[in-house]
Length: 391
Image (cartoon, rainbow, N blue to C red; front, top):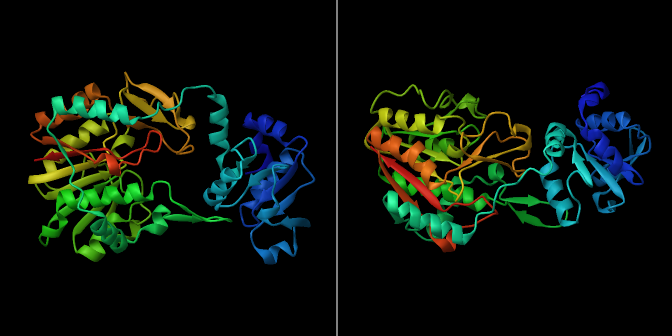
């Protein structure tokens, strides 16, 4: 990013005001640090230092400037974070009272900040409450078979988590300056895989049975099933997978797959179904009906529900045409600038887009309800409802 590229961003004026009267530091001395340098050059800031956690680097200068320890940072500083360790740093800064954009910015997120500022004041995602989930449960029972999900117990879950060994991928914990902070959604993510394991009953699959994980671009679950369970598993995504070299992570349209009719025993979506744009959620059901074997299942976990029909989106995608017609489009920032849509059905939309389509193509719908004592509700992100479609 050259300084001339920054001229298009109005958010730079906002940040310039935040810099006034404060010391300035570029956090990081790696490859991204040049982006921080260019940014401050554009802002006409000459007097700044660097921050790095390496004690060895703190004993030296970097590009002729002082290198401070992260422990030396106070609210007197405005921080230009220029390192891929941003998630861990952000955890620390939040705990110390720093606020994104007000006290620091991530140099790789200028598009996100630009949109965030542009849409300032647009409603955020309405909170999901326990009372709302109980109401939704009562409404769902009226229109689709429902039953409680039987939790096999913490010991069995712990064994599953240990066997899968996904902590690096899903950030089981951040090693910050002061403590190990549990990954916000690590347990919930592992619950998703465990639920799929239980509902598809992988323990009783035979050699040659085929499984497809949909929206699996970055998921290690297929790799685990192949290597440790001997299951003929495939990961499918419209985007190229980070595991593409393995050969069984495929870049293809999940509504028009390569699988033969009646050839797949099980399919699932893990925190993916709600992100499918347009009518992909409905068309996927038709494809599942084609490729599933009789008795085969598609598991969608979680099935996100709300009292309103919502299209949640990152600021960068707001009013870009990704919201469902008839839904309430609102902004979320937990995904930074990456989410085109995160769909929450109300009961009416679920019936129209999912349940009626499933009935039309011969799939039997059932919703499992996760026990209240195991539901971790993080504002609007939660695992409460699980959809099973069986051929």
